[in-house]
Image (cartoon, rainbow, N blue to C red; front, side):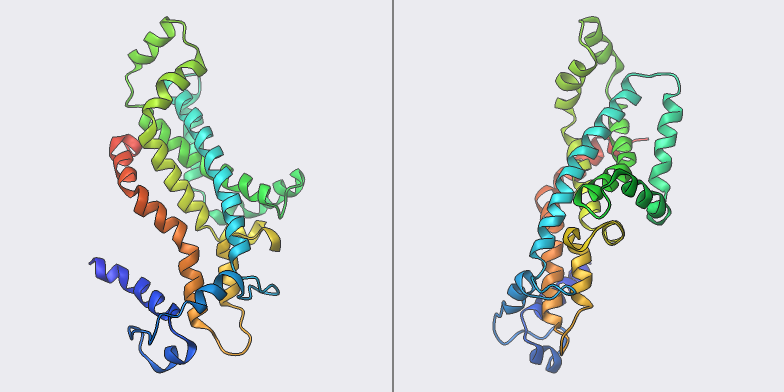
Length: 267
């Protein structure tokens, strides 16, 4: 079964190492005559993504500038929301949580127009800041759900004892809740990182050319050709664009599973 799932990646990798003539004359699984990384070099720094021919490197940086702050902000807000909803019950907290949950089921397409108007009103349309804002707003519903379900498993007596000892809202959060939140923090970071890095719709709708994420640049690269189609460059660019999420799962996949089993998806 693993071989079936890895087959497309193998085809992409082999194709990226061949020149155009080898691709045309061989089969999908034929081995390259030699290890040729010219396509990788061109994909990174010389391929055309529309009117610009600087490869995907600038857009790679754009994606990191979007992903890192969006992941951190949405994780922090989700942790605080989950903490309040589960530990500091207030009138209407269940209604508030239910309203947040609705955000998990809203299709991306539904919010495009109102979000575009909001970004224009805030003066951050077609900017990296605007894309960070979009991903934080859309992701908070998910991060809140993760943290709230995890915190539901923490004994309420622990919080009551801390409050009797004089600990306040942020003291309890910082000294008691956060130290035991590592599993769900890892789950949330991995989830948000992959969702934001792989996003195409928000990137193409809310970015200018200089602020496009790598997914949009990859689409432009594949659909831009001068002369013959360079499938080796396309495949190399696709692998490069996928590397960050692949590395995240390879390096932190076991922590993701542990975090889920520790309570991230408990009802």
